[in-house]
Amino acid sequence: MICLKKRKEEGFFSVLIEKRLFRDEKNFREFFRLDREQFNYVLNLIEDDLKLNPYNRVNEPISPVEKFAVTLR
Image: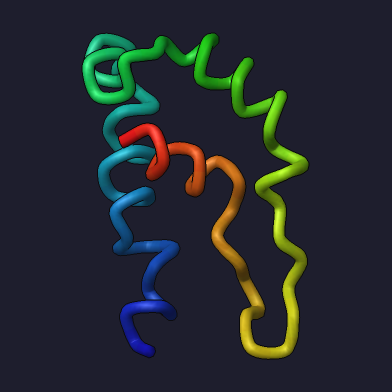
């Protein structure tokens, strides 16, 4: 459970994607095979389908952008 509590600061998405790839267009493109504009376009199309509302056992579900990034990878 500790790893779930630290997911926002130390997780794959936070460390690799938010802190590194979102800042570097070339590496972002190599990693996802999409540029950021394409990534955001597709994410906007499917974001509502990926959303999950919090419930009693999961206070902070995985965000749509995290789900999409993991799916592409």
